[in-house]
Amino acid sequence: MTLRMNHRSVNPNVFKSLLALEQSAKNSGLDHKLYELIKLRASQVNGCSYCVDMHAKDLLSMGESTERLLLLPMWREVPIYSEAERAVLELTECVTKLHEAGVPDDVYARVREHFDEKEYVDLILAISTINAWNRIGVSTGMFPGCFD
Image (cartoon, rainbow, N blue to C red):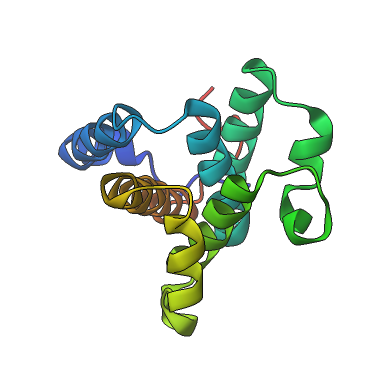
């Protein structure tokens, strides 16, 4: 595997802008484990190995179980995620694959059962931010350890 380019050094302003977006999402008030689940699930959907590796390790360091990490791609088939987490994971997939069906009303309603309007916007920001990182990562050929 070969890194196509180091986006950090090629265009530091874009990197700084993404870091600012990341800080906004991180400081929004969302539960930090939930935010990491969002980042891991979107990264899995987008096929960003660099981000999957990073966010799985981040979740493990936060005390998340290996079982929940391994079964995340099958979250619909296992009872180990809360209803709020399930709603957010579904929203994450819808926003990540926005071109397929948008965010259907029933998905919006399930999320709103657990999150108010501000939190809903915070979730959209979190999902959008990791999708931006994933698009940089995949497009520039990032892989785990590529910056070591």
